[in-house]
Image (tube, rainbow over the protein chains, first blue to last red):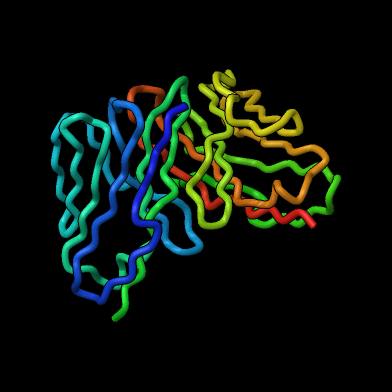
Length: 110
Length: 115
């Protein structure tokens, strides 16, 4: 079946450093979504990418969808302590299923 | 308006007990999803409803798991004869419609611990 891999599993950064998480699907995607989950919280929608090669920005966050629509990345510039949490990619699958990556947990040291 | 709510927030069950977890989606949302999230993992799909119809239950791990949404709003996930491996956070999410790539709005989850 479809596999969704997300790396790295963890990332420790100093406040002000950049951060990137990568998501790879074994199959071509019609779209991809990104969610953030704060410690003890629930996933919150960040963005959706649909077009091949699409790049979207939200303040310090930059999201990219690969040309082949099988991979995506989330880059945070100059991390802040408020960026702490786990970032998940979410990929549509067969039927009505959504497959979430295992997530990248971001730790930011002030 | 109100978001997705779930109850109870925490549930401790003895192995073998039955449990029922409730989800109140955002009013008017057609789609409803249930996920299971183990510690340190991403949400894992369990089942999907479009209004009252359960259109996908491919993620339910065993026949001990049963979900319903009889009137197309509130949904209940029932786990019979709970086992220790059922311990996890159960998340409910709703979305406005089932179109390609609808935003899913998650509830706070029910944390289930089976002893």
